[in-house]
Image 1 (cartoon, rainbow, N blue to C red):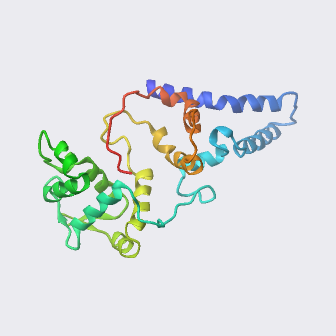
Image 2 (cartoon, rainbow, N blue to C red):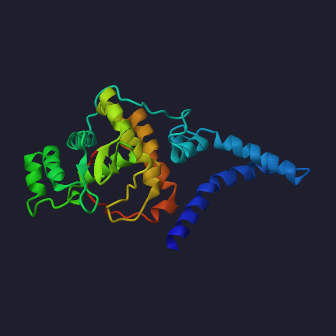
Image 3 (cartoon, rainbow, N blue to C red):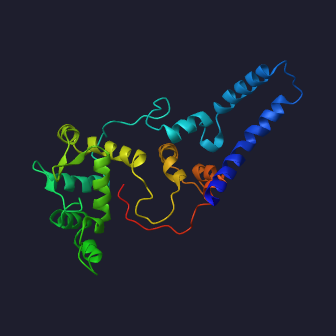
Length: 266
């Protein structure tokens, strides 16, 4: 109940600037009918939602809404290259390459719990981490399941969500989409699919044992936009994204300052 109250309070506070401006615009005006008043409010709302806001780095509320809730269906705001110009230098791409090579043409039998077998988990994790990091990871015990190799586990989940691999008759196999992309474009064609699945389908709160904070995941594309525009600039002050988040206090009533540490795979 407390979470819902916080969300309602945040929405109410976010609406205050709009309400203040529309009251100012209507001050001293008279309307012949309710319909005329409603038409005035509708036009004012349209102009308000299409006006650029500095806090949103020049985006309008309408554009920000599209960015948050329809990021892959708003080509007038942002587009995604179907294929990278160069092979991706990202850990998840390297891990997926290891996974795809292990699956090969014949596929891999799943375990009884539907995970990758240890015959794949251990060598793939060793190849990804390297001998030193692998020794540290297994210092207190060997990897006993796919779940012990989080980077590989998350990559496998992402590959399924992206339509690059699936389970078929008790085995993991590569899909036609994956084979097509790998043969034509290599990892440069696969990475955008993995990224899209990560942004749109994967639950970022999975496995960290902390409460869900949708604002972080929903605003991921806005973060990428800011990085694209200002990533080469050093900023002493808090980012625009953090300032915009600070104006949504309802979300932050659910925030915890302690966060789980994890190895970055992007």
